[in-house]
Length: 148
Image 1 (cartoon, helix red, strand yellow):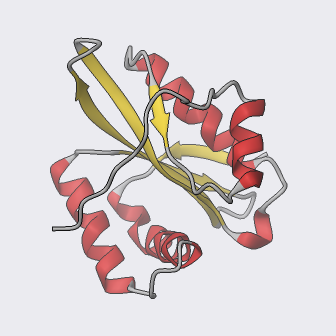
Image 2: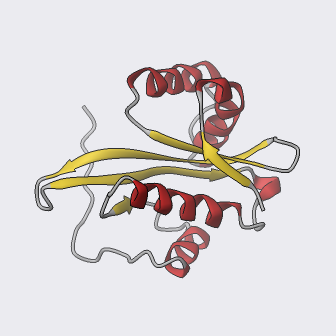
């Protein structure tokens, strides 16, 4: 099983490669320096929870990133599980599930009552994993985006 731990600024070099792979999975162009800047801002602002998965040789194999958001309806805070990625060569080894379980445990530790995520409608592999781990698909709300 992988080691899952909170990422630190010392992990940026490994995380840049993971973030870039994640972005390419979602059909974005490679942007290593952009990823480095994005990550540096997260650590600088301390506005996200970032967990990294490491294999037995301490190579980074995946990450999950959560962003706290206020919730008026619950009068508390929810976390958006915004990003989850496992390098292709390490998939199907339980790393994604371990990252999801670690994210849940971190939320429990912080008294966060609810995690939310979005995934592409054609990402059926991820959807089946989420459902197997107890996530429930929201049928009550649509997501709308506005480019500005």
